[in-house]
Image 1: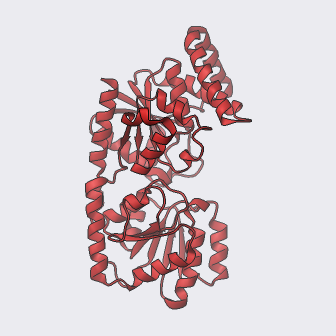
Image 2 (image 1 turned 180 degrees about the horizontal axis):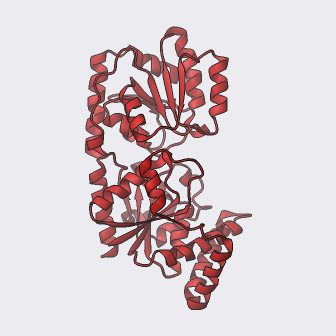
Image 3 (image 1 turned 90 degrees about the vertical axis):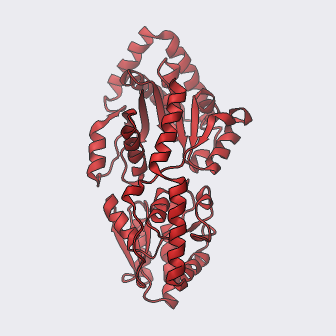
Length: 398
C-alpha cells in the first residue's frame, strides 16, 4: 500500500504534526509519497523538516509553461477524464464566486501534475479541506487515485458552500476530523447521509519523546507557542500581562514563534514597560519548544480561531496545565481539571486566569499536570492515531 500525502505548504515549522504523522505511518510500514503545492517561504529550523523538504514533490515547481504542457498532453491522451475534471473545476469555481476561476484553473493544472507524479500510489490523502482537497478531487476525476482528507478547522468551515465542501465530501472515500467539533461541521456541510464517512482521528503526540517534567519552580514563566498572528491573539496576552504585573510584578511570559503581529507585540511591550516581563524568542526547534514548555508554569494560548492546537497536547504530555479559550475543539481536551478556559477576546478574564494559576498551590498544579498527561495517553497517542489512519487507508484501498 502506497499513500500520497498532499499538503498546501510542507514542511512548515508551525505544523510539525504532519511530519510526525507521516513518520508514524512510515514506521507501520505504510509507504508515503510526499506532495505539496509549494515549499514554505521561510527558513526551516529543524533538520527533520529540511530532510522532509528534500523528499517532497512540489506541484508548482515545473512552472506555468510546463504545467500547461502537462495539461495539453493529458487532454490528448485522456479527453474523458479531462472533461470530468473540467466539470468539477467549473462547479467549484462558480461556488467560490467572482474572481475564483483563475485559481481553480491552477488547481486543475496542479491536479494533472499530481496524477502524473502519483503513479504507483493507491490513495491520496490531503491535509485540510481547502485547495489540497480540491486538487485531490480533480486528480481523481482525471482518473487518478481515490482520495480522502483531514479537516482541522476552524476557517475551513467558515463558508462551506464557497469551498464546495459538500462536493469534496461526496467524492472522497472518507474524511477525517481531528475533533468531534470538526466532525459535526463536516456533517453540516455534507448532510446526514455522509455521517458514516466521517471519522475522528485525533492528532497524536510521541509520548516516548514527551516524558512528564519535574514540578515547575515558583518563578517559572508562562509560555505561549505559536505563530504571531491575529488568530492566536498574542497581542491580547501581552495586554493581559500588563494587567497582571500590577499585582504580580515578578510574573513573566515567554513567547515562542514569529509572524505578522510581532511589530504590534513589540510596540505593546515598550508601551507598557514589559521588557523585563515578556520575552520574544522567535521560532525554535522542537527540542527548544519542549524545554520551554517543561520549564514553564503553564502554557497559554488565547486564540480566537483554532482547531485543536498540537502545542496544547505537548504541554499536557509534559504535565503542564493550559490556559486557553473555549472555542472549537479546545474544550474537548482542556477543562478546570487540567487548566483554565476563558472567553476569547476577554483580556480581563485572561489576566484573572493568569492570577489564578499563580495562586494555585504546587500540589494542585502537579495534580492538574497528572490529569493532563493521562488525557494525552488516552486520546492523543501518536502510534494509536497512526494505526487508526492505517486501518482507514486499508479499508479504502482493499
